[in-house]
Every structure is written in structure tokens, then in C-alpha cells.
Length: 224
Image (cartoon, rainbow, N blue to C red; front, side, top):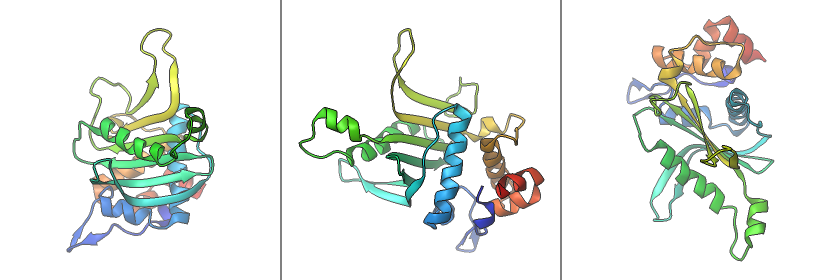
């Protein structure tokens, strides 16, 4: 965890912003080297929790990426990362209840996919260079009311039995903070360390550095 490298919560117009506000996310990830390591650990903690293949080294990271849509309308991605193994990671934080979170993730994924194709390529050539896109949403609300787990995973699967994975090129991870707050955290799990620190910082209007320093288990994980 990068708690010892994160500045205190930013202050705008005399007011302290919460940890998950957009400007604070941008501040946390403004340093590509430190942020790359922090993002690497957070994404792999998420993938480890779901039993998925871990990502490789992050070689590029852009906080607050603004990109044009097909209709020339701009939209902002909180953090966009790319790995040496041709993986794209889209990291988003959503504090207000947004029912179209999954649809937004598909638009963002399309941007990463379309940017890696060239005119004149065959479908076989496109398939070879197509990146693996991972979307991780930290949500301050429960998007899937009927889901039991705080970590809800969306994939491209066949509907009828056998329920096999049709493609692993796009995977959606929705992490619902209200549902996480209802469980007893297991701080031997990396994702639980991240989410516990995030929730405590948000609830108490503290920085991650402050929260990590108050807890021996979180501090131990940060040191690792």
C-alpha cells in the first residue's frame, strides 16, 4: 500500500476534500512511479480476491484522462493504466449513485480496444493485438442489490449450460463499499487492507497515510 507516499487530503477553497473526490484521486496518482506501484498493488489485490490472473508491470499511468467519444463528447477516466503485457486497467471511483455504471465501463473499454486497432487489419490480426481490459469501480453504493458479496464481477459468458466464459478480454470488478462495511474485514487479505483504509479515511476525513499509521496490521501491510 502506498500510504507513506500520499500527501494529506487536499484543500480547495478552504474546504477539505474527502479521500475519494476526483482531485484527491488525481493527486494520489500524479506521480507515475509511485502511483504505478500503488495501482499495481491495488489491482492485483482485486484480482487475487476474485481468483483471476494477476497483471504484469505497469508501464504507463495517466490520472484524470480525458478522451473523446464517438460523438466528440469528452469524458474523464479517473486513472488509465497500461501494462507491459498489453493490459489496460480502467480505475474509477463513483460516490453518487449511478445506475449506468456498467454501461459507462463498456464505453471506456471500447476506447481502449479501438485505440489498438488499425485500418485494414484482418479480424485475426485484431484478435492477436487486442488488449485485455480490466475495469475496477470503487462504488459508494450498492449497484447490485441482489448480490451477496461486496465484490461483484461481470464477464462475457454463455447464458445456457455449461456457463462457460466466452471471452476474458473484458472483466468488470464492482467493489461496493456499503456492502464491504457490513462484513468483518480479514486484514490478511490485501484487498481488505485497501478497502479498510479507504473506508476509515473516508468516514473520518483523514488521509490514507494517517489511517495506515493508526493500525498495526495496515502499517505492516504498507511496509511489505
